[in-house]
Image (tube, rainbow, N blue to C red; front, top):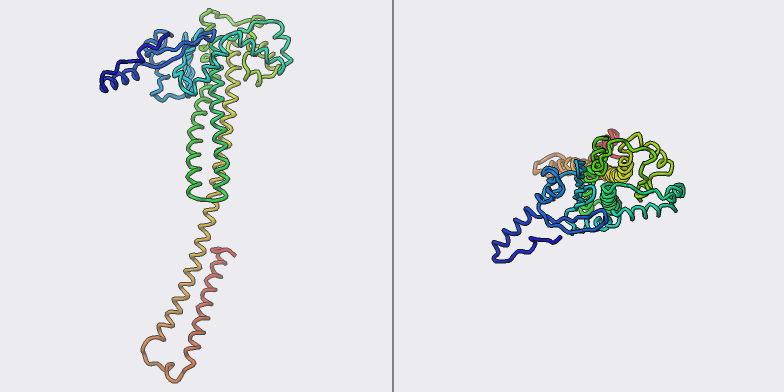
Length: 395
């Protein structure tokens, strides 16, 4: 489909600005991918998208990049509205609409969707797991058709992309934080403190982003009705009765992430109990990525604890330096008091007043100096001894 409306004739700077503002307000770039992985670029406003996928304006508003909405996975009658960080998509039973296809963070997701959306590729991925899981080789050889729904394959790609993205950002932050904290503990300086402050702010923002995704997955896992709303193919097929055990789809092998997280025993038990719970398939999918995002959250929690411990250590060091300064101030104050006493004696004898001590007593000067010095030294030692006795200074 062509990208109509992107090129406008340049008549004047004012008309150009008006056209750009209008285009920004009503037009957004989308990419459409079908069940065969075929893609087409769309340049449609929100009203065209609403008519195309039959979605409400309030749901489409969640995907507006100009508005700040938390991470959300909404199940509607015919669509799944997906807002996970930079991944803003609308998933139907046979089509995926992804916003901002030229974004650097979105391009790898588009490539992965092209590779994973076709059902044949999903079966191929499942057969590639035989070497890692020999216990399920018999199920693959039996030729059972992989019926993992289209919307779940698209949802899995989005969840895998956002979990990997946040985990990569966490590892990058760890590689910066730990050396910065070690350098700060070895040398406390304004430069190192400012560096750690910036990293702590970045960690807080990343923690909030991870927490939002984790809370959304946890909310979905806690509500069977919300998970049931994500079964778009089932709604279209009108399958209201639970699927029997014999007809249960063997879709576990299509997910590389789930294949690495779920053992052969858990797969067998899931297939056995599939007739009891309608949302067992989606629950296993969401639980796998919930565990991954929870692991990322645990990394950030450990990182925050390490930062808090470093801050406590820095505060202890600063308190120790502060106590040393107080001790130095005590010594200087005590010495000042003693010198003041010595100055008083010198001032008394320096007065131009006739006294008996000044008449024919040449040795008086020597004794006054000696006795005054001994008295001041004794006073200084008495003050220091009293301070040590009260624990005001170290030994």
